[in-house]
Length: 109
Image 1 (tube, rainbow, N blue to C red):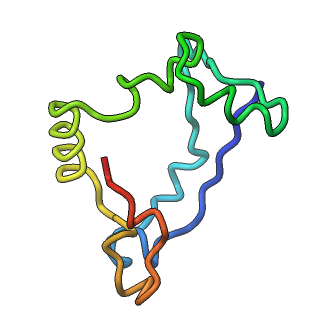
Image 2: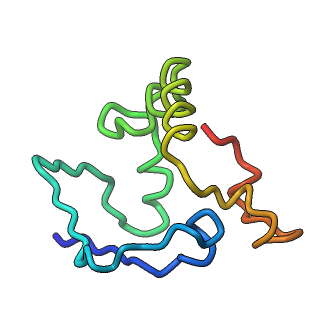
């Protein structure tokens, strides 16, 4: 299996409006995974949707534990956002004007 990702130059919008530039001299940007164990539901056509979403022990991702963050996890997420996030497209009214991305209307966490 292979995993691909892409980088794009977002210097003019995703870096505090442009003042923080990407240091391209640090390229290539490499990500490595250690002890990665993927477990997923095999796509077998339309029937797979209900089969993969069924709340069964095999589909661990559909259990209540993974459906919602705990109170402590929400606190950790908020702390991380407040201390590390430099751009939130859902707050970028200058870029999106009156048409914010659809995911912005969903519950954050």
